[in-house]
Length: 296
Image (cartoon, rainbow, N blue to C red; front, side, top):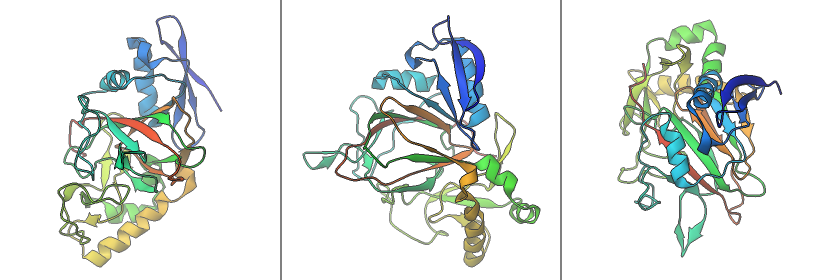
């Protein structure tokens, strides 16, 4: 693994290291305590975030307040969405969203259970989707529950020229009916007709506001719809585009350890989760950085 050392101090006196994964995206940030991150170190971390789209920081000991404070350095935070149980999960800390299969007194303490979470971009069904998500590992199962990320820059760049011409100017509806675990969102009437389902409409090809790079903005497959096309044509074209998402050369898989924090750019990545044994415990706390503009 190549190490790209950036000159910055985690406490004003040491340098952090940026170690790229060697894959299409992702880098590990080393020699840093996120509770003691000075402005120079954060500037280096932010550059790495834009360069690599996903950052991993291992060995952290963060309270919910620490996680919120670190995440706020990227921008204002979203409140956690109301989930399939009809409630949020951390009293007094609405920014914290719990991803977990654990139940207490028969009630889930979090969301998404132990099943597979399919490829998706967080909350792209909003008019102004979040900029980034940060996920912190508190408990992990002995096997399974890995998270994979794919680069929507690399996928866009790999499309054949004729396919790029076919998708030029198209807009896509990002469905708001189901979450990535397949659960119906709170207060939504179920439908599987992508032309009538709730959601936001965004350009299919977007330009990243910070890097200037073009990316494919697919969001998620279920109930997606290319506006203005016949349904069969929309389905066929989306299926063709999604074949690129499945290619491993565009992805990086993360195997979690307790104390890992991963932060990813929701605009230019997608992610998925492997299923795991529901008798094992998995508890992750997530924050999201609020979007400031519509995708363009």
